[in-house]
Length: 254
Image (cartoon, rainbow, N blue to C red; front, side):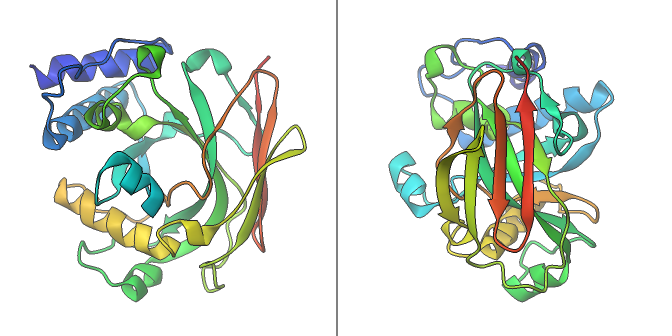
C-alpha cells in the first residue's frame, strides 16, 4: 500500500467525477492510513490552485455512530473549489453519487485550541449561517468501508452557505426544512448535531489540531448533517430554510 498512490487515485476520481473501485476491499486500511490519504489528496487539490477554507464534520448523530460502529465523529477538509455560490449552479457532471444534507456553518474569527470548552469555542466564532453540503462517494456501486469514506475526504464534495448572522443567538435547537423544487423533503433541527452544534465545533478543533492543522481565523466549519442526506437529481433546485437564519440553496445543472 502506498499512501501517495492511493491519494492520487481518490483525488483523480473526485477531480474528474468518475467512479473507482474500493481502495480497501480487504479492510486493511487503518483510520490513520485513511486520514493520511485524505491529507495527501487535499495537497493535490491545493497544488492545482485551490485554497484551504475549513473543515467539515461527519457522523454527528449518535444514531449514525451506532450504525457505523464508531464512538467518535469523522472529519474532512474543505477547499475553495468546493464552494458553490448561494443561488448558483452545481455541475452535476462533476459528481458520481451526489447527495445533500442541511448543516449549520461556523465562520471563525480566531484559532480554536484543541482542548477548548464550548464557551471558548463560541467566543472564537465570528458568525453562523445556514448551509447545504454536497456529499459524494466516488466508489463503484456505492460500496465502501469506513476507511474508504475517510480517505475520500469523508465524502465532502461541495457546499453552499447563506447569509452570515451574529452567533449570540441561541442556535442549539433551530428548526429547519430542506426542500427540492419547493417540495419539502426533510424536517429537522440543529439539535440533531451532537445535541448542540458547538459540540461539533469543539470536536473539529480537537481532531484538526491532532492532524497538525488547527482551526484558523477565516475558516468555515460545517457542523454536520442535521437530517439524513437526500439524493440529488439533474435540474433540481435544492434549498434549506433555517429558523431565524434564513435560506440558502443551489440549482443543479440539467
